[in-house]
Length: 389
Image (cartoon, rainbow, N blue to C red; front, side):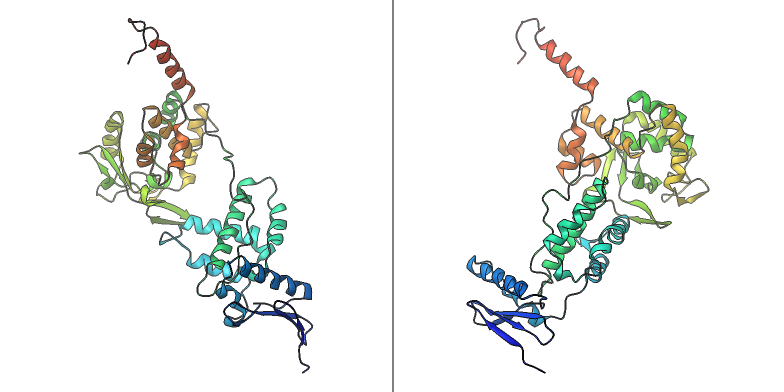
């Protein structure tokens, strides 16, 4: 075998291998020899790699553990091989991913990411590759674009943070704002009259479910897993400790979406007679009995499709065919905000762990703003003729 031809440079060295590819290496500030973690098709690519290492040294951002990758680990995996393992082991704040989140990530990977990057070695994907992929990604589907990009960026970040040997020297996904998207569905909360009509049109076994969704701002999964023992008639509170999701036809019970999701919510007094009536006449005996089970079996969870069969006609009767079931929770959150609830109080009632999630409910409806304006005018009508202290 012929010996590799070596070209001397002022910094580092480039060798042409018998295969025709090029290998780059340099002596680091610590006096050790470091080689690139890959070989290059062109000499200019090898020189560019050396130039980057030299710049890192001059800017005092050189990372020996990254520079030495080629000498300490086997060839990098494909993006798909790494991402599949990442998805299998992924945790957030020490918790396994929620089943619905895992399913969503799998869909994004299989549909929007793997077709472009799946077979590529993860250390060979460049910023230019990511930009070109994003430019043609899911045109007209802004939410999917943002979710796909955000997932890709997160996986690259994990690969760059691997210890002791990072798989890539930097994250090639850094398009500013690409992981953000504007809310497409603008919710118009239900009025009290619309809510009354919806509840009136629902069969009896669903009435309390709609009222708790609105007045207690509960999620569908929280309601579908609600049990007799979760209703505290002594304090008039509902204890939310679990939720249920349906993934690939299977119901999976788990903790709420976040730590803050585990909460006690006070039930408005005007609902308590209906709560007691539902427990007495429409709920099976025993603390573990579901309040809103499947129609055919008191021991089975209700599927969303079962609810929609009765909810869609009810919202149509109220003239609100745009009102999703989850929008009832939004309605309840806005009603709570209109009572003067603070941001912290809204966060506690809604089960939000960050202020941003709760702040969007603090906007005032038009009739509330009119009331504020009326009260402002009343200030100048005080008998003293002065603004009240």
